[in-house]
Image (tube, rainbow, N blue to C red; front, side, top):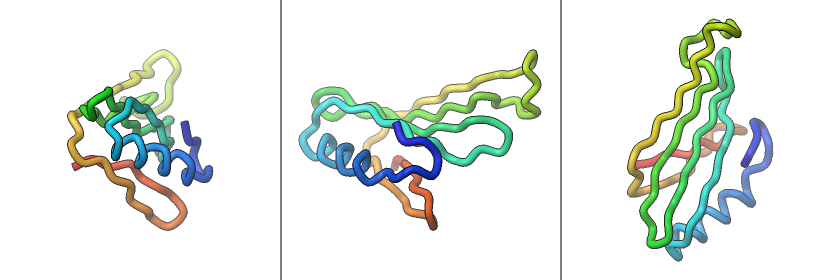
Length: 94
């Protein structure tokens, strides 16, 4: 798990190695949210089948404790990749 603004180099190297050898992995990288915590992740099973995950701790916005609506989505991922944008790294999937 890589918190916001932390060095992701070790996580990226680990993920790239696991993808190359089709070994199980999971990784989560926090990205800048507006009014909630946002994480993007990747999970891969033995053999290389992968899913991209996105978690938003309050998808409804507003950050009101009684109305918080956490949301998790997942999509099949055939080509995981990392994009560098200034000081942040984004986990993407094609």
